[in-house]
Length: 357
Image (tube, helix red, strand yellow):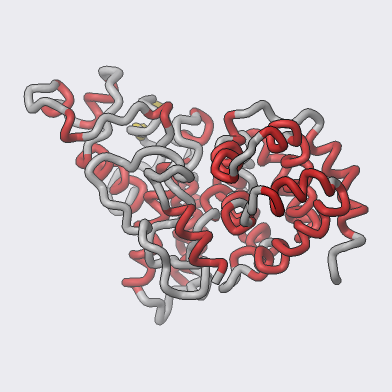
């Protein structure tokens, strides 16, 4: 039951291993551990914890005075005035846009304001022709599809897309496009639908231009074992990582696993399901994702090894497992390891030799 322990730490939005405070006045539906033996709890909130980090400077709604200008302004007007809107109504308005941009009868390319970044800008969304082709294809596969299940996916997609790489200007311009691609995929492939981490992949593919939807489908095929029920790639990869680290750096491995008792279920699922977006800046994913798609399990193991061994001194310096977990959870704020992809390509052959099949 490694799954439940992994989910517990990932869902703890306000705990030691969470990723910042919850959005104002929202309970976290994903806070309870899933009762099934699968990571794909797609009917609940994504277990990729919200990106509501300290840079968001969120104000809880109960802290806002009734006379505050924030209370009297619409969410668009508030953003234009430079205020960061973080009330429940502000988030609802933005999520409605992510959920149903087409149903509103407005241009898919109109200006969209993100409460997360506080910026006003034009979302680079799917063009009308791309949208029509992709949505039409999605609808063609929708016969007999459980609409209630799809609506559940759509809600989770809206929440996740609003949070991933929060405040990143380039990603802000892609959010509507990301949501459209993820909804379209959930329609076309209802067996899998949507699960945590796919929004990180969508961000990468949407940055590639007009062929993003086909690129997303191609990548999803390459990463099938990562997101399949039960997540077999993670199941197979965790024991292999321990063996590889024992061989590469026995001292570090002994310190983390024997002395501190580090449990990989608190580390690997978050990194792998996010395409290492929880450990690396968005810009690095444009190089990391193709590497992972090409190398498969060996690629995931290689990137994990190179990143963690790059911080060997810091990891060896921590004397409590809680400190290690907090450090790993904040890796994205640390300097990116030098020559990361070069080192990954250099390390891959030796890792591949030790991966079965």
